[in-house]
Length: 248
Image (cartoon, rainbow, N blue to C red; front, side, top):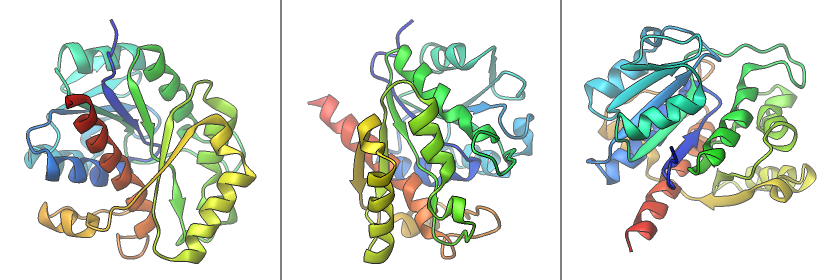
């Protein structure tokens, strides 16, 4: 089965899910979204409060768990059958893939479960989907390896992913912060491996309030770490643009 250009967003942390979903549903309330939860974080999907909130608000239509993860509306053996199930069983217009709450990390280059984002991108591309990736960025996390573009994103997309995807970055108003992002993209040659896009998502805070969604990452809320959440929101903005293009 082919995904036939089905848009699929990959995220490396569970906290990226809500901002991406909120932006998309704000502009396209009737779009059918399926969330695929991997086993890179918590295994039971019931551990996720945000999934309950998003489903209660009808912002996510179906969930699929695969591998050792369990408890989704549907369960699959691996990422490939999960993606096919999202299209063929859930009839999704858009799919978002990422781990449940939590992430395992060791502080080493390859020792973190978010590395799965690379193989997820390859699976999406193998099946003919349109892949987009949310980068992990932060200026609130003072750990050097996560400041600006996290080493999680750099390692995954320069060393692990074997096929090309589109990585979307927010247009940050603070020039100093934006310069850091652009310098890292050049330093690590991210644009040699993947398509790099920049989008603005100034309305994200308003959209989250509209849906009454409270986001947090590593204990930080939107105001404390807004660039992190904006990176998820702009992936949603790019999906909206692509869907409009394909309708023409």
